[in-house]
Each structure stands twice: as structure tokens, then as C-alpha cells.
Amino acid sequence: MSLRTTQLFIFDLDGVIYLGDEPIEGAKRILAALEAQGKEIFFLTNNSTRTRVQFKEKLNRMGIPAHVNQIITSAYSTARYLQQKHVGASLYIIGEEGLLNECKNLGFRVYSGESGNTDIDYVVVGLDRSFNFEKLAKALTAIERGAKFIATNDDPTLPTEHGNLPGAGTMVSAVRTGTGVPPEIIIGKPNTFMVDLILKLKMTEPAKAVIIGDRYTTDIKAGLNARVKTVLVKTGVGLQELTQIPQLGPHPDLILESVADIFDYI
Ligand SMILES: [Mg+2]
Image 1 (cartoon, rainbow, N blue to C red):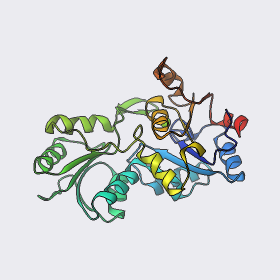
Image 2 (cartoon, rainbow, N blue to C red):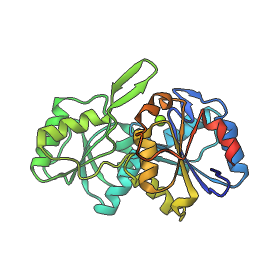
Image 3 (cartoon, rainbow, N blue to C red):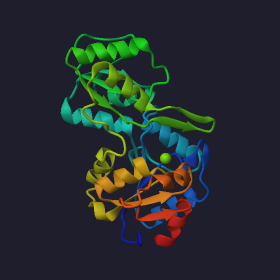
Image 4 (cartoon, rainbow, N blue to C red):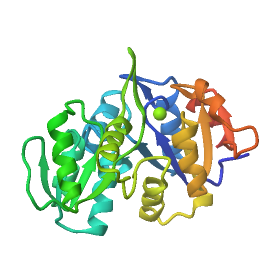
């Protein structure tokens, strides 16, 4: 397989471009090479805790010259989804700065924590490291009163250098269990919403795009669902994720040691 005619390169961040605060070896060089060839580059993450500006700053600190408009997070995508559904809606958010700010930036009335309103249109759930009983109760009450329920992502865990922490999916499950209602949509990968958003932004057909990720169950599945090319890298959790690839099911188009090996295909 070749990526020579591929125009749009969509990179997962954690485990692909960096690990914690360290860039993956060769990531900077491959991004510079793609840039020099005039390819479109996007960065995609299910992590809803930070804003796009914060991710841009993190990449820039590592010497990677990313722009805000190249970064698509599940928080930003959730705000875009809500904008399509209900401009100016009132939201009760279980989530952190990234989700709160992306929703505020698009003009929604945002409630969180203790603050609330009897007239909530959507309960939006993402990773919230200050999640508590009070927030869960607020979310349940709003949904019982008719608010719709959407989730930024469904990741069961948040991998860190010290091991796994609970992911957004655990909070989504709490709301789901309490209300008996599943989310209307889960925006993050493996849903295609974020990949489709980029394809639309760049007016690119799926055959001209590739997603590069370290998780079969999110990155690669999102790519397969969106019908773009898929590359699984063995950095991050990629090596363990090889066991997730079904014997008879769809496989990634390429399995590489790391992003650095993309050189051989462009
Ligand atoms: Mg990853």
C-alpha cells in the first residue's frame, strides 16, 4: 500500500505523536515532511478535558508547529454537533475546562457543578476528574425533565504514565444507569463524527484520507467506519491493541512500528 496519493493525514495524539509530554521519536520529522509535500494534517483526540488552544500549545512546546484549526477534539466536535442541533441551547455539563469552554465559545448557555437551571436542553457528559454525586443528581434530574443526553466519548480508561485512571465512559455509564437512557450520540472515536467533520471541512473524499492511531477499538474502527485508510502504530498502547484485531474482521491497512515509518509510504 502507498500513501503517495493520500492528501489528508489525520493523526491521533496520545501514543502516536507524543507520550505524556514527550514527542514520539520521528514524529516531528514526518510531520515536517508531509507539510513540505503540501499534505493536509489534522490531529484528533477523544480527550475532552482541554481546549484546542491548549493542545496547540502542548504541540508547540514540543516543537511541532500546529495551528488551532488543525486540532479536532471530542469537546470541540460535541459543541459543533450541538450547534447543528440547537443553536444557543442550555447545557448541563459534566466535564472539564475543554468541554466547558468549547461550548461557551459556540454561544451555548452552560451550567455545571452546583449551577443549574430547570430548563436544560442537553446533558453533556465527558471526562470530569471532579465528578461527584451532586453532578450525577443534577444530570439525572435534567434528563428526567426531558433534557437529551449526549457523550463526548466512551473510553473506559484514561491511560497515564502511572497506570489507568477512570475514563469518560465510566461517567457516561453512571448517567445511563441512573436514567435508563443511553446517550443519543457518543461523539468520539469509534464514531465517525470527528473524521467526517474533517473530511467535510477539507472537502476531501474518504479514499484520499488516512487515520493513524494506536488503538484498534477507537482510531482504527473510526477510520474503517468512515472508509478512510487506516494505519495502526505500535507506540502508545498499539502493541497491546494488536490483540484487539479480529482474526476474520477488518484489519488496518498498515501496521507500523511508529509514525516515523510513514516515510516509506509517502
Ligand atoms: Mg492514542
